[in-house]
Length: 144
Image 1 (cartoon, helix red, strand yellow):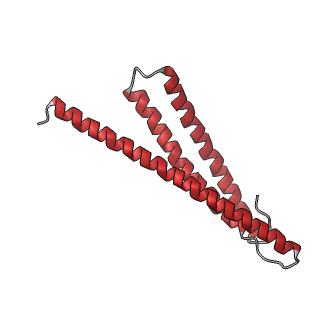
Image 2 (cartoon, one colour):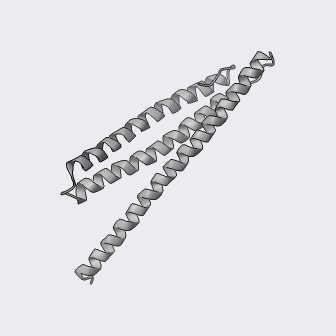
Image 3 (cartoon, helix red, strand yellow):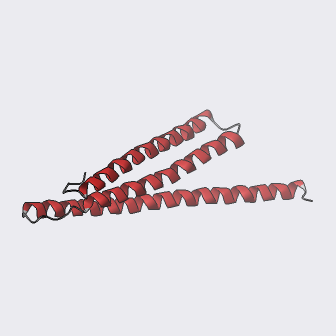
């Protein structure tokens, strides 16, 4: 049987492990954003190459549309992770800290709401870029 000190220590250890888990999830989201940004940068080089090739009258398929779609899907996954962390942190502070300042709670709520809007935006962008990539397989197009 655990006494109250041992229960408090166990609960603190559990909360610390949970916080570390959230930080790791947030880091994964940030790394996905970095990877997506690199993929998006590659797509701009591919689009530039497609324009130059098109100008030289040598028809080639445009690979940039597929790369942009991959970038958009990666951004979406990263934004989902970041929104998840923001929501969990808001719910955690709202439930466990009844004396938290209203400004802090409102700030966390706006952060979570903004991250949810980002998920919606990145989702729509990923769908649109996927449609463009599908269309580009039918003929030449230029990426966004």
